[in-house]
Length: 348
Image 1 (cartoon, rainbow, N blue to C red):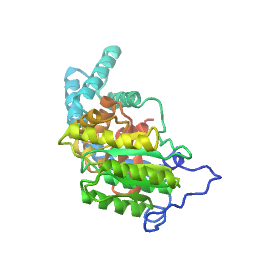
Image 2: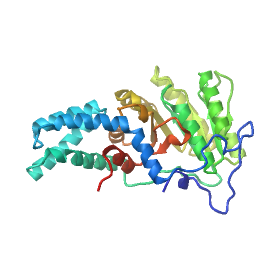
Image 3: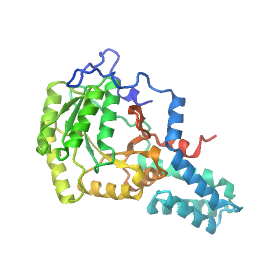
């Protein structure tokens, strides 16, 4: 099941025609056709090429001239994984599992290491994400699905909201966007450009306004106009964790009064190119508020894609989206099997 299958309306329901403030249609600025499965694979392969080439060049050096997987090889493999931004805790877990396999099988050829590593990473991500293969927004008729988006400034939060809005509009959903990052005029203006491009409706106030007030107005408008999905942007300041916690709590409480149970999801956007810094951001935000999903951006421009493995394992929060390019359609629903296939090649 692809991205658009998860958002299609029932066949007897006409496609929504909600436009942005300028009356732009949903089709404007959005690619006309969903790419084929082969095109999607090729795009993901290209998006992860730097991570893949970096990992395997290091791995090749680690096993060069070795005939068996011994303690020395495992020490080198540990260094490879840590320097590939998989993270220390996850690396230790992977190494321990491989040690157990070596002890059980008695003899293991170093040439088999790629396949072994693939199996263990795949198993680790399976455990982190559970058994659910498809992970779409649970949009219910009559009640807008509210997604609050958090993350530091510069992580790609506003762009992720814009791309998601465009894809939801293409799938026939009526989308409202709340510009609750009222501390940066640039953030509001950038979000307005994305909303116009996507054909979504954006609710905004003056810079410096109360973010909770923006969220309140957005949900009220969304309810009154039969919106399907509401995306709430928030400020990304981490200099004062207590202040951040209080602000996000206030926004959540206000939204819950308008739509009981809202927000239905809190998505943390992380910049994959920051490597280990993304782990620290995840720790900060998970301490400040309940985070239920992750979007990891900018993977196409970095060799640090190993953060997807480590963050998925350590925080046990599902990765919902990954960003593998600047195009609207290059915000991809994350599929752990596709990710592992792209990293290690198709398993035969």
